[in-house]
Structures are given as C-alpha cells and as structure tokens.
Image 1 (tube, rainbow, N blue to C red):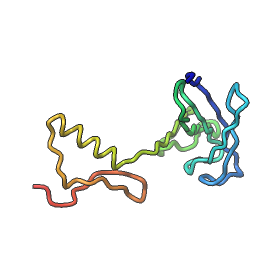
Image 2: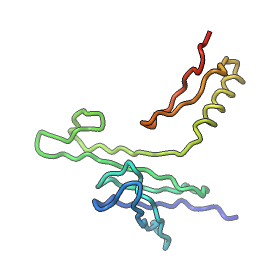
Image 3: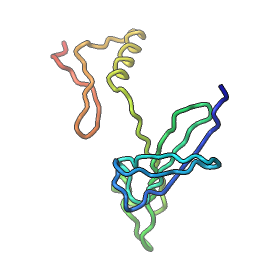
Image 4: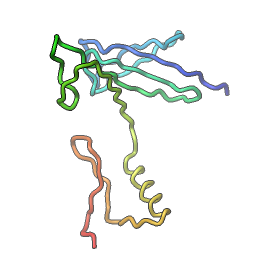
Length: 141
C-alpha cells in the first residue's frame, strides 16, 4: 500500500452550531475531499477546528484553537485561568479517546516490571467532571 500524505482541514466554529451535535463539512486542503465532523462539545463560537492526518497515518487528529483578543486600550479578556492577557494567546485543545482502565493496567505492569510495588487494591476512577485518578479500594498497610 502507498504511504498516505499529510492532510489538513480547518474551519471557524460558527455561532449557529450546537457543540457535540452539529456536523460541519471541512474541505481538505489541496484535495477534493470533504470531512464531515461533529463540533466537539468543548467548542465555542469563533474557535478554529483543526484536523490533521500525519503522513503515513490513517487517523485524523482534532484540535480546537482558541484565541483571546484585546477588547480595548489597556484592557483585555480574561485568560483561561483568570489572569489578564495583554497579548493574543493561542491555546490548542486536544481530546484523546483512551481506554483509561487499560492505560492504568499498562502503567502498573510497567512499574512492576521495573521493580516497583503496585498494590492490587488500587483502582482507576473517573469523576463526573471528567477527571481521572487512582484510589485505594481497601486500606493500604
């Protein structure tokens, strides 16, 4: 099989979309193909939805680019963490779909193979906020 060339597609998220539901058609740069992409749930109006398929890979990677802009002389919009941003700042957000349980098991196996002790009482958990972590299911002694 021939090696796939790098491909890119991008679009600004319009105001009339429902993130997580609306699908956008993104033309692939330098190609006749069009990708049908669901607007990510985290997207906001004005974000740039970028798709990249690295050379030799079949899977596309999706990122959101969000830029804060100066509002007026001497003031600016709030940054992502609440700090003032006097200049334009670009932030690329990437969402990876992972089997977090398998990732945890692989990490524990690698740690054990390196001589570490990993308790079988530890479990991977996911909070409603999307945060993931590890908790002890029983007392560790």
